[in-house]
Image 1 (cartoon, chains in turn brown, orange):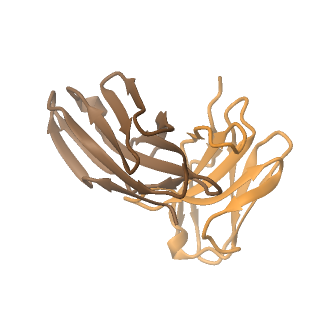
Image 2 (tube, each protein chain N blue to C red):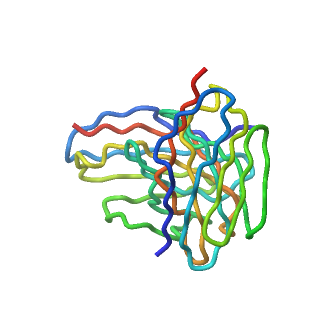
Length: 109
Length: 113
């Protein structure tokens, strides 16, 4: 059974303090790993798709990387507007999207 | 370009009642998936519709059923509501079932009293 765990559960950063969020997964054949951002009471917003180990994607202050067992979402010089829950999901062969519980990020001014 | 839309935004129902939630996919998408998200948790997959058929189903009871229409829009029906069905119900659309990224709607907040 495909599984996704995320750490830390919650993270508080000062504005400008860079950090990384972790997504660890077990999947029987990875078709893709997806990162989403979710604001309270809203639907998840798509950020990145990663398909193979070694792949990296960047968007503004966010950079996602992928290994065979985990993915990292690096946040460089975060701003208060980056505060949200960040969700990781995997898609395996013959399966559907399995989401992790998310990391709640708070960026303080 | 219209994104994924869902209706209603909020809904309050009583235990034992039935509810229908609606979703219109992003323009150009033909596949709709439904998720249940409890507070503080990640979305849990309910089922996926493609070409008007349920293609895959998660670990949810038969009280949860759905439908997809020829215009790709979809409905989620829940019968015999339980208190535990209170959650944010999310619809996501994608192109095909090959694993392309899913785009989510704003969700429907269902409260069962």
